[in-house]
Amino acid sequence: MGLVAGAALAAATLGTTAARADQGVHDDKIVLGTHTPLSGSVALWGIPSSNGMRMKIEEVNEAGGINGRKIELIVEDNAYQQNKAAQAGDKLLRRDKVFALIGALGTPMNMVTMSRALKMNVMNIFPVTAAKEMYEPYHRLKFSLFTPYYDQMRAAISHFVDNEGIKKIGVLYQDDDFGKNVLEGCVDQAKEHGITDVVTVNFKRGAKDFSSQVAKLRSEGAELVCLGSIIGETIGAVATARKIGYNPKFLVSSAGYVPENVTLAKGLTEGMYGASQTPIPYYDDATPEVKAWMDKYKARFEKDAVLQSIAGYEAMEVFLKAVELAGKDVTAEKVAIALESIKDHPSNFGGAPVSFSEDDHLGPDARSSAKLFQVQGDKWVYVKDLKY
Image 1 (cartoon, rainbow, N blue to C red):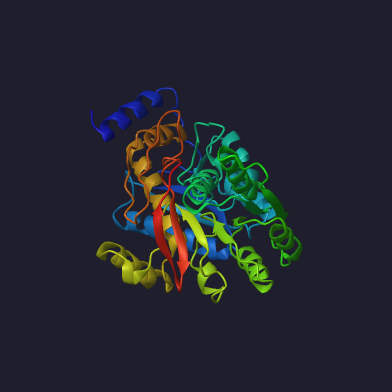
Image 2: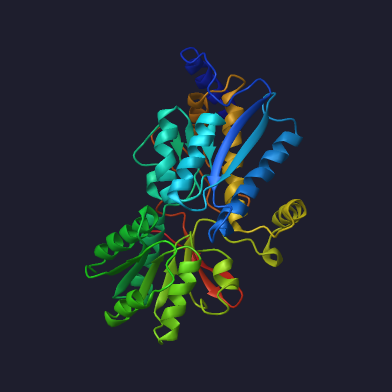
């Protein structure tokens, strides 16, 4: 039996026990919602990721929609603040009555809104964060699309210890759920290699002064410093180290593997490493297909496409594939079943393929889907595939 037929049969079977339409499903449209930073420093992630989602929706709507319905996306600003995420989430869930939250950005922000959505039988789909809480513990209506920060760090630590002789590891991390995912990955993999005295220091979101944290990392001899940071704090921490002549190897997760940590750093991040599932798209290096996509994105938004744009585009692409597979009578349960039927869905942008199953709602293979990159000159350069 083919993929579409199998999913349709499963959805039809479930439909006998779920006759009513879920919220957000109308005769002529399906309404989706997201909350993301449209203001503040992390807007460098939020704006392009939401634009990527919009672009995919526009393509689908121009082709006639899905099973007779157009797709509508309501985007709210969470400013990368939990209180604003809570307000945005409540608006989307209760006033706008969205069918699913998709691509909501930020680990702490999703931790506020995800549980509220699930209690209302609203899906929490492909949040733009690689925290393991986005798929663990298991819930039938939550799915993750990104290699977890935890596994990115474990795979990278394994590389640096085995291949570059690193013996002393430090972690400078944002004091929230995101940062703790990075911390746990580094500490757990270090222990696997017999390194038990990891140097750990944290900071509050939005911090500007890293002098005490960097001084501790230096005094305790950390040769590799893992950064549980995004953009401003990444540059600030590395700049502080450079200023005092401290030059360990720096490593960021996918949250910090962004063009801005090169372009805004003005050379300070030269040599820094990053772990990510998907390469940053550089126009001169792109395939003809990716170049055409980047041209289309720039024409639509008058901005260059970046990795964050791809994250939003691919998240919406996979989700809308499942909505189509679910058939005309759309419910959250049917879309979940359709998602679970997706196997080895390819990335057109060089990322890992994704698969789901009834008991596994993480798309990529956590242990072997990360890649290592390094800042060389004005761009991030691929180093190697990672696994542990």
